Length: 77
Image (tube, rainbow, N blue to C red; front, side, top):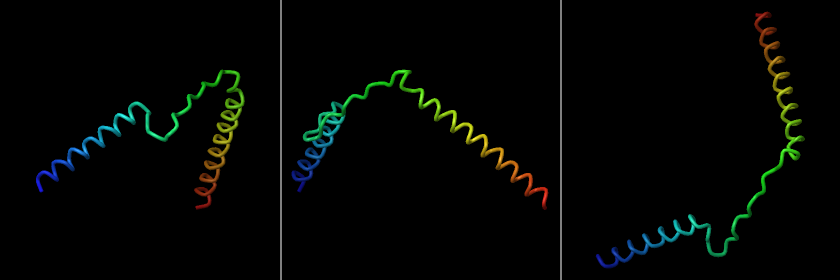
């Protein structure tokens, strides 16, 4: 029984070490390597900046409306 437990323990350690090495080297068998993503240039971000401005404006508008509703609710009480 001791031999079986020692063998099983060594097997588990080898599997864990193998998985760690595969993870560290991105070399899983049967799994394609991840593709490198190119960074966007500044020209590509102009729509992102417009979306960010619109989002900020919408958040400010919501905050103003929320505060106005809170003031109106406190005035009626």
